[in-house]
Length: 153
Image 1 (tube, rainbow, N blue to C red):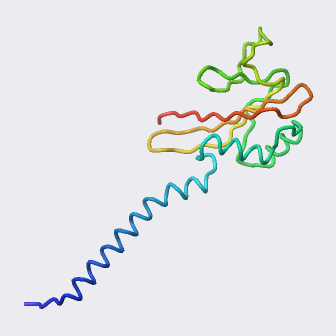
Image 2: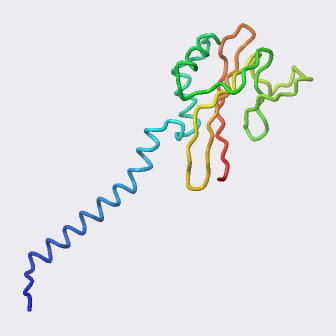
Image 3: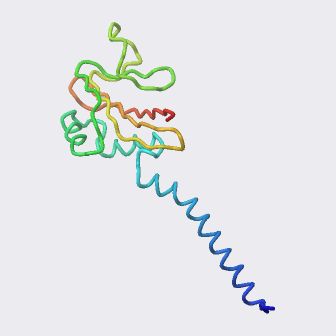
């Protein structure tokens, strides 16, 4: 019969606690690290603020296009030189404004760019993150709207 002393029992319990704590830390830290490493996973307001730091209101469209082209993760999906984007009832921006009514108050800007910022996955859902950039008639940035499109796999 093997005799087990109290010290080895206490030592085993301490090791188990350390392992459990380490697992819990990993479970909690993994999503945090993912958000830090992939900025498109951050809330839309953070994404918008980040874009505004890179291209503040008043930046000319040529400078914005240069910045977009220098970022290998971003892609221009659509660039319209003669109308802005429209914000729908659910706060979703879209490029397909009612062109027959140029005075529609929901239209933002005179020119616009639809920009794909990236994708990420949460469980069985894919999320595409896009920015809509509006410019005035002279080509200066006046607004940025962010849309996250969630699709099931």
